[in-house]
Each structure stands twice: as structure tokens, then as C-alpha cells.
Image (cartoon, rainbow, N blue to C red; front, top):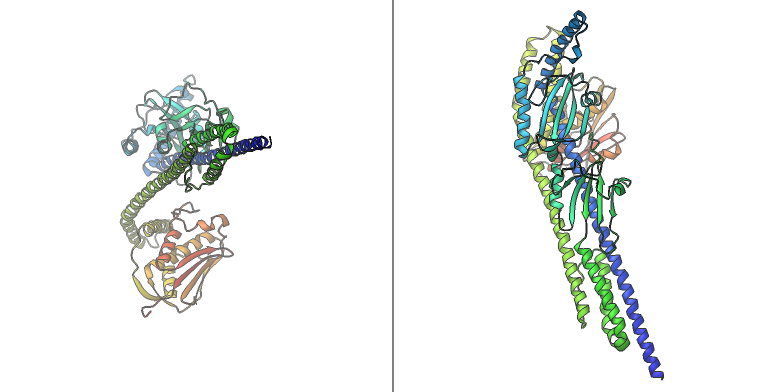
Amino acid sequence: MNSLKLSTMLIIGTFGIFLIFGVYGYYSFSISIQEVNKLLTTRNEGFAFNMMQDLDEYIDKRIEDFRQLTKLPIIQESLMKSNQEFLHRQQVQKIMKEQDPLTNIENQPFISPTVNTELISELTDVIDFYKSEYDYDVISELYITNIYGANVVLDSETSDYRHDDEKWWQEAKAKGTYIGETEYDEKLGNYIITIGLRIDDQNREFLGVLRVSLTLNDLIHEFINDAEILNLQNRSILLINEKGQTIYSNGIQDFRETKAVTYFDLIQSLKDVGTVNISDNPDDPIFISYAKSTGYKQFEGFGWTSIVDQSNSSFTEEFVDLKNSFLVISILGMVSSVMIGLILSYFISNPLRLLSKMAKQFSGGDFDSNFKGSKIMEINMIGNSFNSMGQSLKKLIETEKKLAESHAMMKNERLGAIGQLSASMAHDLKNPLATIKTSATIIQKQVINTDPEIEKAMQRMDRAIFRMSHQIDDVLNFVRITPLNLSEKRITDIINESIDLLEIPNNIKLKIIDSDFTILCDVKKLEIVFTNIILNAIQAIGKVEGQIDIKSQVIDDNIKIEISDSGPKIPSEILDKVFEPLFTTKEKGTGLGLSSCKNIIEQHGGTISAHNNPTTFTIILPKKTKNQ
């Protein structure tokens, strides 16, 4: 009787153990699934955000490309000429109306302006360039209007009527930029977006408006590239507009009559970046990760949203399968415990603890754990699945890392190509610029003391030539790293020769503490460094009274050079970025000057840094001589 009770207690105890391990395993897998889902959604949110940022940045760059087009001399000269012609026509119309008040002058079309063949050719070249560059239609329509709203260049798609009463023309004139809504072009068979840009002369006087209609497949070109990389099994990429209609899903969609996606109202009220689960089944979630457009620089965004639709994941499926398998085994174990509880508890409990430990390690990102096996076939199946899952997780993470590295390599190759092109263009510009400077010098010698206005104009020309030469040198110094041409020279002599290359305004005092330190260096390259830093100090002080101090001293085996100015301090949030390539706060700067200085100093084995109170650039160079 006592033996039976002990057996019953043992069976109940074994049953309880199986029950505890079943519940524990269930929640362990549930937590693991939650962690995996959290990892997936966080990654997908990053994908959605990066794609949206790339899209906004691409559109802003495209707008800036056409803004630069408005500054072409041929466009500005044509607009000035057209405005003069139309001013005369306005006066003629006024006289006509006075002579015949019944004539409705406002409804009469303008007399077609003289065809500007050169300007038409220029705009045609722009359209052809983009088409050949991208192998698809980028521009649907491109034309320019004068201050009266009339077209300066006519083509088959436009008329010579006034456009100044249209919204795009008025908004572009008032705000500088107009961006229209997405429209379907029946002739092109594609969606287009119209952009209007105000055209000003050098004195910021209004000259007219440029209107360009860009195709949708160009505007979302960068988004499509990202989507093709990220499209995987169980994951799809979408782009929806401000109404929730699908713009892109495995290609550009015709969304004129389509309804909003079902979850649009849900994400519309949420923050800019996030994830929602639209599935009611916890074992089969459908995660919608999204990122709303927040604009980029001057581009405020279209109100579009990028979507990463993760219907399921192989990781989650394996965890769910393992959880279900674990539950089945646990239930079978509890039923079998009535007969063989004592035996099975010994063979199952230890493997279950190991599986639970592996599940936690997987959720923490450690995929190197390995299940060594058990004498129970079912446990071995689960352990092998864990091993397979760990390897799959590890391989997938490595694959995604390689994809990210590949994407970064592609961007680096693009930057390298841009750098080569910049260097080539800068080199090609130096010879014509030198010719202009020589010619200006000859003209200046011939007109000395003849006309003050001409002398002022020549001075302005000299300043403009200097600024252009300086910016070209910045580009060349950044993209072209040449070997050092070492020679010994006094630091003070190098600084003075650098100052001789600059024009020091009368409102700025320059103080140099003369120190007789000789250094083995590339003199020409150090002159570039000092010229850039002193020129920055002059520009920072501006037209107010100010002072620039330059001092140097020997510290151990190094020479420390400090250049400080009385200008405004560098904002703390950008202090660490001033030496980064292409970073600038000036409207006319290249963002390469200080970056080139840093490259030159590091090439000499030194360091350069900046700090405030006062604004000071500190250079530390090794003190070497030919005898060392």
C-alpha cells in the first residue's frame, strides 16, 4: 500500500516536472520569438527610414540641379532680353486699349518672341543628357517664362500665352520653389511632378520662372534601387502617397483609382518611424514597418511613406515550429510519465535545460551554442533544429553584413568617380583662369588712373579670380595627394610668404610672434595650410575691427603653431565636423579647405585641431632637420 502511494507520488511528481518544463519552454520560446520579432522590426524600421531619407535627398538634389540651371548666363541673358521686348509690347497694348477701349487686350495672345535657337539647343541638350545618362525619360517638359509669364522658348507642348495667373508660376515667384502634385501624363504613359523655380539675376532681381516636369520613375529612382536590394522572401517594399495609395510595389503602380492600403489610417496617427502588427495570430505576425517623409534640406517632402511589409520570417517560423514541437513533446511526456516518469525525467530534463539556455542565447545574439545530442530521438530532432537555426541565423546576419558592405562600396566608388571628375574639371579650369588673370593684369596696367569705375571693376575681377582659384585649389589639394617635397625652412618665413598671397583688410591687425624654428617640410603644402586658415579667419572677422594672432613654440620634439582670431566662435555642434570633406557653413565655400589642411598635416606626421574662446587652430608638427 505504501509502495503504491510512493509510485503515485512519483508519477505525480514526474508529471509535475514535465508540466513545469513545458510551461517554462513555452515562455522561453515566446520570449525568444518576441526578441527575434523586435530585432526584425528594428532592422526594417532602419531600412524604411534610410530608403525614405535617400528618396528625399535624391529629390532635393534633383531640384538643386535645375536651380543651378537657372544661373546659366544664356538663360539669364535671354530672360533679360525677353523682358525688355515684352515691356515694349505692354506699352503698345496700353496705347491700343486707349485707342479702342472695346478691344479685350487681356485675352489676346502675346506676339511670339524671337526664337532663341541657342537657348532651345541648350535646353534640348539638358533633356537629352538626362535621358542618355539614366536610359529613360527624366524630363517630360521643360520651359522658361519671363516676368510677364510668357514663354521665352517655345516647344510643341507649350504656347506663348501668359502663365502668370497660374498657381505654379505665382508660388514659384513668391516662395522661390513650387512643387506640384503627382499627375498622370497620358502621352508619356507615366506619372509626372511639376516643379517651378524662381530665376533671379546676380542682384536677386526677379527675371522669370523655370518650369520642369519630372517623371516619377526618375524621382523614385534611388528608392527603386534600395527596394530591389531589400526585396526578399516574405518581405516586400512599398511606397505610398499622402492618401495611402500605393505608388511603388514591385514596380511603379497605376494608383489613380486605387484605394488606400488597409493599415493607412493606423500608421497615419503614429510617429514618423515605427512598426505595427496587423495580424491577430501571435504565431504568424505581419509587421508593417514604416517611415514618413520628413524632407531634406530645402525640400519639405511629399508626405509619402516608405513601407517594409514583413509578413513572416524564417527565424520566427522555426521558433514557432520548435515551440509547438516542444509543447507536443511535453504533453507526450506528461502522458507517458504515468508509466515511465522516473526514467524519462532523467533523459529529458537535462536536454531541455540546454535547449532553454540555447533559446536565451539566440535571443541575445549568441549563435555559436551547439546541442550535443541526447538518447531521445525527439530531443535530438529539436536540438538539430536548434543547431540548424543557429547556423541559419549566423549565415543570414553575415549575408546582411556583406550586403551593407557592398552598398557602402558602391557609394565609395561613386564618390571616387566624382572626385576624379572634380579633379579633372578643376585642372581644366586653371589654365583658362590663369589666362583671364593675365589679361586682366594687362588691361589694368593700361587703364591706370583713367577711370575710377574701371579700376573698381578690375579690383572686383581680381577678387573673383582669387576666389575661384582658391576654390579650384581646394578641390585639387583634396583629391590629388602628391609626395612630399621636403626642404628646411624657418616657420616664420613660411607664414610670411603665405600672408603675402592674401589681401589683409585694413580693419584687421595681424600679429606674428617671430620664432626662429627651422623645420624639414614641404614648404608649398604648408603655405596652403596657413593660407586656408588665415583666409578663414579674415572671412570670420568680416568688416568689423579684429585681430589675428600667430605664435609658435617648441614642445619636446614638436613645433606647436597656434592661429587665433577675434571673430565669432565656431558653434559647438559643428566644431567636430569642420575637418570633414564637403562640410561648410559658407555660401561660397567648397567644404574642402580644412579637409585638405588636415590631409597635409597628417602627411607630415602631425595633427591639427580647433577650439573656441578664442577661435584657435592648433597645428603640431614633428621638428625634423636633415641631420636627424
